[in-house]
Amino acid sequence: MNDKQSINLQSNAVITAIGTYVPERIVTNVDMEKLVETSDEWIVQRTGIKERRMAADGQFTSHLCFGAVDNMIERYGVQLSDVDYIIVATSTPDAVFPSVASQIQSHYGIIHTGSVDIQAACAGFAAAIQLANGLLLSGAHRKILVLGAETLTKITDYTDRTTCILFGDGAGAFLMEASDDGHGDVSAVFTKTDGARGHLLYRSSLASVIGENAIQTNGFIVQNGREVYRWAVSHVAEGIQQLLNRSGYSTNDIDWFIPHSANLRIIESLCERTGFSLEQTLSSIKQYGNTSAASIPLAIDEGVRAGTVKPGQLMLLYGFGGGLTQAGVILRWSL
Image (cartoon, rainbow, N blue to C red; front, side, top):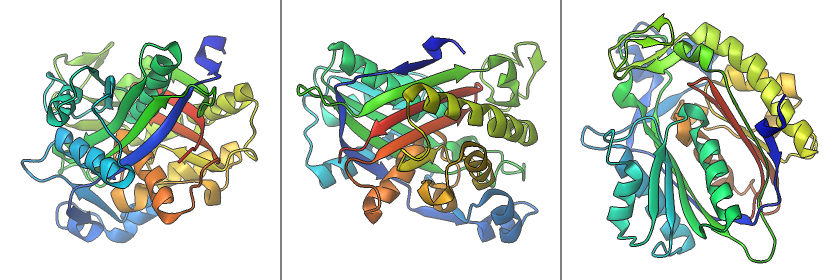
């Protein structure tokens, strides 16, 4: 393992606010039974999902981001006028360009800010936190809006019973700011990529191949579920352990484990292999399905709203998915 893949940090970046949003429309497993040959029992047994949210016809990722930021403003009273960078992790932008981040800038009238969308699939939110932390640590920026947001239902093939049951829509936002007192929330990060397996989980665009592998070009999410599951429970578990080892923490030190909510069975397997208990694990899979880059902030906010996530607690966030990519962050919750 190269040391560049995991970095211990003394960061002056702190999380000062959180906000989330999900569309109003609820799609239950019973609703899915009307679309494909499936059942509530089958879906729950294999995925842990009971329902998911679906964006309206005229509702896109930017609109979900506005909802998450509005929720943040309402709850924490934050000001956005001095935000100097916006990072949006998404695989479902409204358009290839302009970015969703630039639409957020326009919507809130933020004058002096950079804006960028990043695409790291289900690892996107953790990767965005890493990037924001680096910009704040460098001193180049002082206040960054970080979002993970998806409208996956718009790129889901509802004739494919193996994938259409999985995906939902949602958005989550963190406000990250530089601290002058030497205190920082992010203490360690980890990244890893296995591009040779990229054809196992993809959405086509211009090319009809990934590497030497021919792919479907229908623009929908395509997944080899069996192989992705095998990769996740072995390689992702190894990555989580590498992050722990290099951070100096153990599973006993971590108050909350927040993996990407891909599938409850994957989460259970990761817990078994890494030593985390399900009681110390936060997930958004049951009520929201797989929301890719939005799943981690949605899970954290469920804990915040329930009062189980408290200031000072140590969290391990871990995203994994298309690429195939991994991104992990250990941080101290400060809200």
